[in-house]
Image (tube, rainbow, N blue to C red; front, side, top):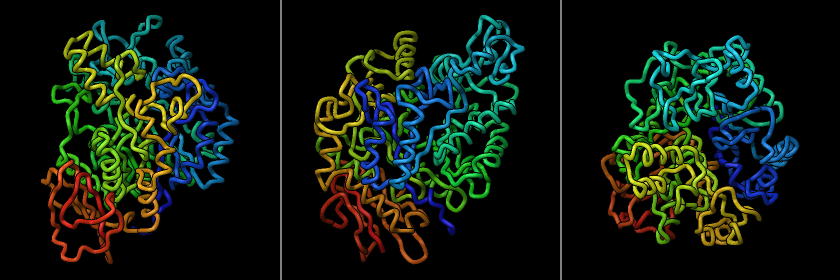
Length: 556
């Protein structure tokens, strides 16, 4: 790999603005709050900040339902605040990546308000409208939030498509005028000074032309038709057009969220010579603990390490030399990694959080850290379903417990504790003062009660904290080209307790060893000369003996 680009060596930090830092006491995080915390992120060592949406929105889906792409939500601040944030960030050497949500808008967007007025309206074709078939929906597609993906409109007697909430109608990317409006919007934000885009469900923008039914779903399985619709007939044409007209004109970072992709798909979207995106988010490794009872992500099952190794290794190997990986454990849609793949007990939380960080950050790709991951924030257990805010969680509870009666309330709450998106949306834990230093008011979502121990202030005082471990990992990535360019080689796929792999280039190699259990393990990797230990989450080295959640890297 020659000509390494800046974004291949960068580490990205995701901010969920609503939950990061409130500056005015209304209980909602905001842009002035982000500005206040930029020096903290600079101290961590990251290079890029990805902001979840800050646009004007009625917040049916926490800002992923946008009513105006060119306005900032008053909850978060003003355009002047955005300019100030960009200026302060750039002065600190930090880049800002915006969330681009263009598969759908809010039903309160002016385009949709016009579109539903009548069938002749010029904006009608900005969305996907279809006549009823035999008196019901045009096909059996299911929304990702439960129920049909079609909503009947009484006024014009047609259905509109919504792959998510009924307040999130899907855009019709086959309309060239719509595409141009989106490109103009992107250009406008780039001219404001933003440094790139994370593109929400971008591989869903092109729908199958004949709108066939999805043979794999029934209303009863709480499924969705996302994977069926993904990677549609014109998606690569549209992304090449977007790249040619907008993305290639700027030195920016781009990542596409792409459910239902294979590694072969990834090479098409993010291949080094395909002129579309720089990398994608795939979800294979985040779905390995999905329900065996057909309930999708609603389960409390523990993952199997062999599955995790097989999937991550496939992505490392299949993309090597062809396309670029994104590396992530969690985000605003996925539960906290230390609770899911580690051990969030008081005894092992710190150790296992460091182990997970080390396992991921030595792979090839651009790492993404989700806010609070660097201090080991955990999932939350709220006592009542009414305390949850996430539309996906509330819809699933209503569907599976109240309507279908497929699971009991207690069962469902155990699934919610494991899988709800609100697990990662609880406010950032800055210190042990009232409301964790997040707000002086009432927070929009409950703060995890463990904030008294798990918080930024405590982490910064403790040189052995998870924060300083992440800082070391980020620093090593900047110093050691092999982390960016080396080839990945998995050791012992069938070992269901230890994850070991190598990174190899022509003049050196790294050996990465991670014990995913709370027991001692004995492993020997035929290394007569252990080489130099460059990082570990223990203060000493016992060679072949791996202590609980021990992780270490040797350089040869």
